[in-house]
Amino acid sequence: MTTVTFTASTAGEDARMEQTFSLEELNIDESGTKEEIAYAIRRCFESWLMDSVSFSIVVDGLDVDVSGEQD
Picture 1 (cartoon, rainbow, N blue to C red):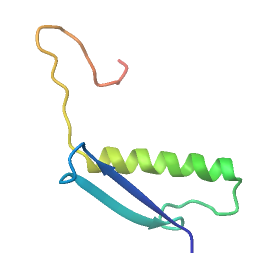
Picture 2 (picture 1 turned 90 degrees about the vertical axis):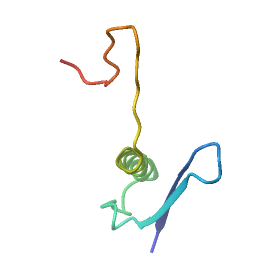
Picture 3 (picture 1 turned 135 degrees about the vertical axis):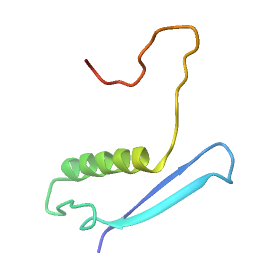
Picture 4 (picture 1 turned 180 degrees about the vertical axis):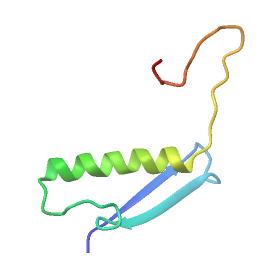
């Protein structure tokens, strides 16, 4: 069984998270090309990170939308 471990941390050692998944748990087909598998893993990591980390951006003094969403 192939596993993938996602890890994220801040500059300090106290703020670290790690989680291991099988490719099956990530719904990634091992029969794909290496490029397809790598792309799928990157996408899963991005989703995992965005779902796992709480953050905010505050811009004071400018009317700026930093959400990344298009109207």
